[in-house]
Length: 234
Image (tube, rainbow, N blue to C red; front, side):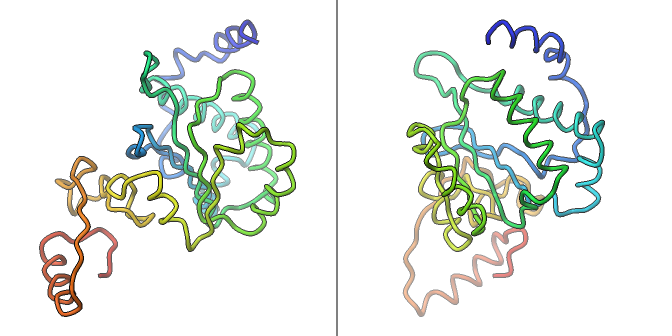
């Protein structure tokens, strides 16, 4: 397997691929953001972005586009690996968050083909880099599918899987990632990608404050004036 991988890396052109410009069309689909409570970098996979018909066709419509997607996915992994620390005691795995909200599902033939190709390629040529796999906004069909394959999954793999229904997504993430490292679209307080408040980063600590009912309205008004959050209606 090691010999095959070395040959594949040479033929695939991994060293050149790392610096190749493949565009930024998929930066909202897969991206790194913050760290979990144990220091693992967190990777978000937002499958619902593929509901965008234009993006879907641009990514999966034909074999050439699917090949480009595959190269982009490998490039993203290679860049992520280079940020890990493989020294004794270092962080050498990634925390994965898979957002299944509005996910196209297995009915999309082109996506199914591309996903199968990517999984096969990664399984054949990379060791296990996942610390935890958290699936949020999990629809019923995904849970049903996992129930079917569960008997065939090793106990080691099962221990890494966590599933959360839509109403429990933020609560589940906070068990593993502190709120200041969770993007605001998932109920957290991280606004790294928000132009309205660029000085607020994941380095800022978060404090819990308990308010009496009569203080709540005044505090909300003060907070809105001093530090509004992007996309917040409160």
